[in-house]
Amino acid sequence: MTEKDLKGYYSSKKYQPKFHTYKVDNRTIHYAEVGNDTLPLLIFIHGAPGAWYGYIHLLDDSLLQKNFHMVSVDRPGYGKSGLGLVEPSIEKQARYLQPLIDSFSSKTKIYVVGRSFGAPVAAALVANNPDKVRSLVLLGADLDPERERFWWFSGFGRLSLIRWFLPISMNVATDEKYTRANELKKMLPFWERLTVPTTLMHGAEDWIVDTSNVSFAKRVFKKAPLRTFILPKTGHLVSNERPDLLKREIFYYLAQN
Image 1: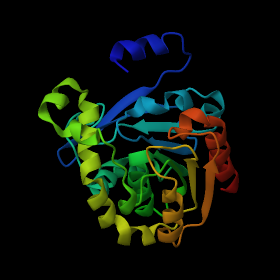
Image 2 (image 1 turned 120 degrees about the vertical axis):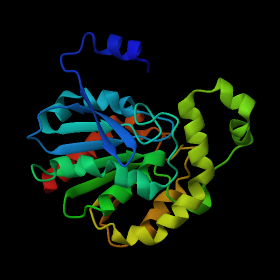
Image 3 (image 1 turned 135 degrees about the horizontal axis):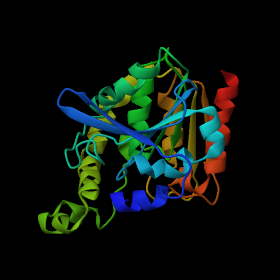
């Protein structure tokens, strides 16, 4: 969405997000914030390509607004978090998002949602904060380094001429994809640190990230209490296609805490 798109979208909305940036090392991280900061914090982390507004319909949800202070962040390299400046390291991306936890953890409970390429970043962030985060929900999670999917057209995204015509965010996603398997391998020992209650929701018709990633998570998230769902007639964008089920799971964990 362009700035014009966003302005038009919010022209008739009662509540509009506030926007903030902070710096870690030399990286600028941008995020959108909705709601009362005395409520439990719900953090959304997008996939690839993506931006904070990938969760715009959830930020607008009146029931979520009533119960949560919500933050949706631009991952490093996307949106206003250094668009085009790729950060392949999952562990570093989690470190760059750590201030979101540090800023609010003394005041409230924290819940995290991550999807697709943002799912392992969300998991790493939560694994680093077992005493601060109450739950983690992963949607269409790309976790298994042995099951990274490529298609006949994937390689074209690496050609300079093709890249010139593509949106910058798409090029960042391509660069992430071609380093993804190696980065996920580096995270394998890390997953034993994940102890927070975790849900995986995956569309049965997801052609972008294989459903076998759910079985993989069951093997490597050894210490995290897991709930898993393979959703029929659902593709990759679970939060768009089945927001009702995502909200149900978020409120399930809210009720537990």
